[in-house]
Image (cartoon, rainbow, N blue to C red):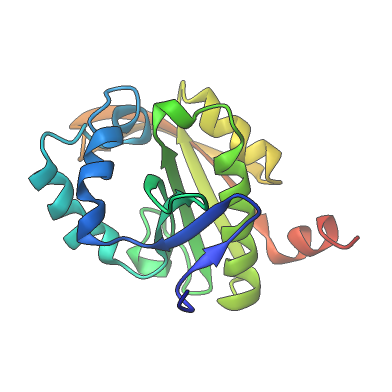
Amino acid sequence: MDNNTLTTNRLILRPWQLSDAQNLYEYAKDPLVGPIAGWPPHTSVENSEEIIRTVFSSPDIYAVCLKEDSKAIGCIGLTRGKASNLCISETEGELGYWIGVPFWGNGYIPEAVQEIIRHGFEDLNMDKIWCGYFEGNVKSKRVQEKCGFIYDHTNENIHWELMNDIRTVHISCITKENWKNNNSF
């Protein structure tokens, strides 16, 4: 494995490859996945390839894969500073994630989130990591709570361009100091 790959007990977090397009399409076409996370369902394998080439080629965007077969089943990533959807400094990041419906309820995303938080604070020397969820996305809210994020604020009546709709987003964050205090065993 290269140094762009992160691992947990059950997962490999690795850069996306064009060969992941079929798997990506399989899970990202499901209308239960994208819209609640803020993006439209994928329409074809070619659409998924384009997302891999453009969006998922950014630094610190990872395919979430089970160790047993290394097939992409979801996505997690950190967007730093100005590249984020939030107005944050270059020493801060915004976390985003999703996982295919067949893998819901197994604790894979909280496991991946914990590793990304560690990576952000230890490897990338970030000061704070932000994360948001749209009104009604109870699963995402629960992941953030499990992983130590603390509610910060709510933005209402936001025009969300990718879905061309109006949304309410709840924003939480975790600081390096809070993370260290909660992880000093």
